[in-house]
Length: 162
Image (tube, rainbow, N blue to C red):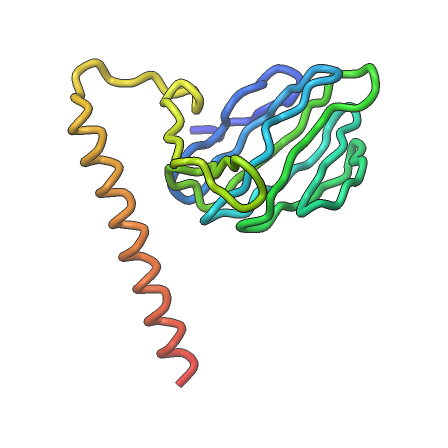
């Protein structure tokens, strides 16, 4: 069995969405600006494949070009804006990827209430056989599994340090 290969010229979508990571190719049009946000739990990595984009991370702005990468760490406010006349295509990943993944802000000091993104935002078709309560249970089970894995990892680190 072969493994999947993805091409940014054809696969403008989510590639992998798990609690450990979300990765995707994203296309933004000239003049388009993404909403400013941060991530409470994860880091976000951006690799520009086509076009030019101005990134603002923690108040600092830089234009990123094809082949260049930047990172917004946990809790760093960030925003991206397409500059120039060419669409931008980027690879991005958020890790870990646990809902709610995005924190939006009313101003620099006041968070909006948590926003849970719909499954359609991750190219996932919801199962019509599952109820809302079942989805909530699935989400909570995933969060518990990540917490358990983190505790096991921490215990292993402490053991190795001694």
